[in-house]
Length: 102
Image (tube, rainbow, N blue to C red; front, side, top):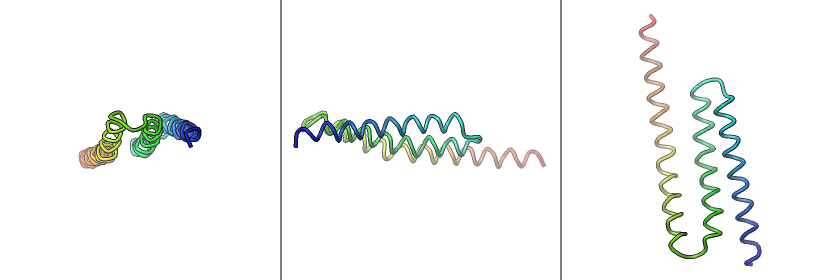
């Protein structure tokens, strides 16, 4: 069983790194703000979760595991909230500017 944990951890770390790369590529390539935010928000939350899960497997039982778990919980709460707040502010700014053009 001890031989399979580094393999699973490596797969999770590789998948998380790939998702971070695709999210960064989406931020660079997508045409508008909301598409870019979607690419960044979705991949950041999932990729960070996968990376932290891979690190948790390597950490073993101890204080490091607890710290990584707290970081994961913090990211899962704050990342979607921050993305939503940013999108809402951009939407309001867009509506406000559309009213000025008329």
